[in-house]
Image (tube, rainbow, N blue to C red):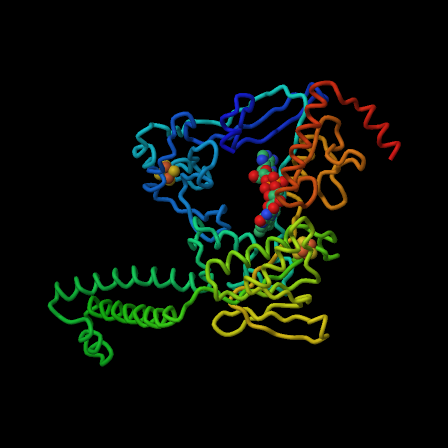
Length: 456
Ligand SMILES: Cc1cc2nc3c(=O)[nH]c(=O)nc-3n(C[C@H](O)[C@H](O)[C@H](O)COP(=O)(O)OP(=O)(O)OC[C@H]3O[C@@H](n4cnc5c(N)ncnc54)[C@H](O)[C@@H]3O)c2cc1C
Ligand code: SF4
Ligand code: SF4
C-alpha cells in the first residue's frame, strides 16, 4: 500500500466514489466524488492530538462495533493517506452545535469545517472494479441467536478480538464479560458522584447519612423535605453499591474464552440464502483457531461443518497441523440451533451425522463463519457503471474472459467478481491490470473476445 501511495503513475483518490461513467473502452470519462474530510490531507500529520481531545464518542465500525472511536478519527492505523477525517453525522460543530476543540488543538492547522465534496473528472481507458463483498448478516438465521446471545460472534468480530491492536488487545475477553466490566466502570462513576453528594450533605448538616436514613424509615423526619430527599439519595447510593458488589464478585471469576466452537457455512451452501460455497471460511476458521491457541495454549476448538474445504496447495496439511498442534477437533455436523447455558455460555445443538445422534455441547464462545455476500452497494455501483449482475448478485462476467464485465473495457476482480481468498484476489487483480493494458495498448479488440466466446 505504501508503494501505491508513492508510485508516480498512481493517483490514489481515497474516501472517494465513482458517480458516473461515460464513453467507451479506451475513452471513458469517470466522474468521481471526493468526499470532504474537513481535514486538509496535505497539512494533517496524523499525530492524533485532535482525536484525544474530541469530546464525541461514536461506535467504531472498523472494530465491528466492539470499540468506540471519536468524531475525528483515522479509519485504521497505517492507512494511506495517513490523515484524519471528521465524521459529519456525529461531529458537534458540523451538526450545528458549538465545539471546534479539534481546530484549537491541531498544531498543523489542518481542520477546515468549510471543506466541501469535490467532483473530479478523469479520462481513463479501462476500469477495474474491486469493490469486494459484505459479510452475510447471521441475524437472518434466528436459530443461531446472533445479537441475542452475547457470546455468539461473527468471524469478522472474532478477527478483531484476536488482533493485538483490536478492542480486546488480542485477549479473548467474552462480550458478556466486557459488558459487565463496562457496567462496573459506569457504576463506579455513579457511586463516586453519589458519595460526593452525600458527603456534602453530611458536612453541611453535620449528620450521618445512615442515621438520617434510619430516621426516615422510622418516620421520624417529619416535614423536612430536604432530609427526605437526602434519605432517598442514600437509598439509591446503597442500591448502586449492592449492584456493584455483586458484579465485582461475578467479575472475579471471569476468564478469557478457551473452549471455542466455529460454525461453518452460515448463509453459504444454504438454499435459503446463498447456495454456493464461499471458499475461504473453512480456512479462516482453522487460522483463527490456530491463532487463538498460539495466544493461549489451553484453547480447545471444535469446528462444526458439513465438510472442511481445504482446497489449495498446502491447505490440507495446514488443516491437519491445526488438529495435531492446536487442539482443533473437526466435527462433521450441521448445527441446528444455539441455546443459552450457564454463565452466558452458548450451547450448540447439533446432529452428529457420523453417529446419527443429536447432541448438546456448551462453549465459552461461538464463532459464526458467515457467507461472502455481494457488497451492499453493488446494485448502485452496477447502475452507475452500466453493468449487469449475475444470479447471486455479484458482477456478471464472461464465461470465456472471466474478468470481463458486461461492458467492454470494464473488468471485475476479487470478491466483487465472486467469493475468493486474498491470494486469488491478488492474482485476479494482476490479471485485470493485464487485461486493462491490452485495452490501453490496442492489443485487445472486442471482436476477438466475441470470437473466443463463440468458439467456447
Ligand atoms: C473473517 C474473515 C477472515 C478472513 N481471513 C482470510 C485469510 O486469513 N486469508 C485469506 O486469504 N482470506 C481471508 N478472508 C477473505 C478475504 O477477506 C477476501 O478474500 C478479500 O478481502 C477479498 O479482497 P477484495 O479486495 O476483493 O475485497 P475487500 O477486501 O472487500 O475490499 C473491497 C474494498 O472496496 C471498497 N469499496 C466498496 N465499494 C466501494 C465503492 N463504491 N467505491 C470505492 N470503494 C469501495 C471497500 O470499502 C473495500 O475497502 C477472510 C474473510 C473473512 C470474512
Ligand atoms: S468539532 Fe467535531 S470533530 Fe472536532 S472536537 Fe468537536 S466534535 Fe470532535
Ligand atoms: S469454505 Fe467451508 S464454511 Fe465456507 S462455505 Fe465453503 S464449506 Fe462452508
